Length: 212
Image (cartoon, rainbow, N blue to C red; front, side):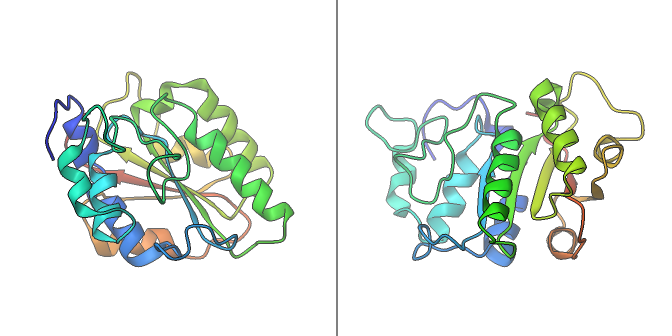
């Protein structure tokens, strides 16, 4: 991709997680982006969307030649993803702390419609957990047993403050099931995403090295 992009590590740290989700886990494709029964993926970490766009192109959601226009004035591929411009994008994101609360709302709405086999996945950055709105969402999802919701936290040690016992412990305290894996290990990621854990929302903490 081209363009002035200051959030390169924010993108590269998410690449393996995104690929495993779209290649092996999510029940969604270019032909089912409007299906009510599709899985939902929400990129809360919207300030580093380059890897997201690359995966969407590889999977046929957008033309690959769009990638060369990244960040251009008239390009649909902005520095933050826009759901009205990019096919397959569920939310416009980039303002930190919004994705997980939105994911809770999406999962609740689907449950209210009886779509209990439809899952919602939200990718969050570890530094994004500094935002208090995420902690309200964590508490509410745990209290309501929102077991169709999976949060994916990319832990590249960018957070201002840590959590005693690690990120997973923060979620576990509110009734979530947790898994912490190598964020580059595709087999471990797939296993963590697909292990059935009824009755609880689930968080996968994907540990990587790039900061951003």
